Length: 255
Image (cartoon, rainbow, N blue to C red; front, side, top):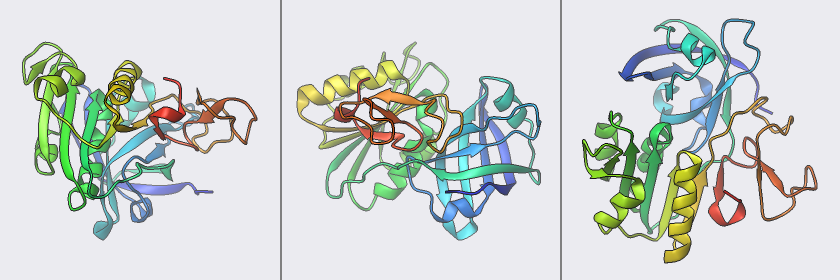
């Protein structure tokens, strides 16, 4: 089991409205891979449960990893006030990362705060596969330079201010993007549409599920999703997103 450690904040900056990028010095960087997450504990003792945040980038040489998160509640609001030199308790890396397929034409799809994991995934895949990234935003863009540096980037925005107006599926169709495997992370409606698209076109599809978590290590069963097969831990048709995931083959889970 992973142990809680004290990580040092190297830097933090606001990169969009309510969106923050934080680099942490942590031994977790040595084992972290794309698709995993860390649990971040607030310094305020009244907030007992950690916040699960996906890993955006890893720098093993500097024992550093980057998280990019959106302020959505009191916990992440507190995190947004941390500064370089501050310390924070974390556990990680947690969960299972993406199952990387070599020599396959890859479509990486991120929606909203599901975009950050695609940066590290594109980095890990860049010498193994042809990379196409499709990023879906409401309107304001972030992490585009990092994604462009690692593959072909296609953008969809809800208001049409940049790229395709509409969803990531609209962008895929408009740009005639094809591939052998899809890696996706984002809100559930987006993942449902991607799973349906992948099934229709016979494309392998891996999805990283976003879910509120309590323990983050698989003990509490608070973050389950419905699965095709029975879970060995609970003997029911579910899987623990934090422990069995967050990445699953789309065919394994009900979305």
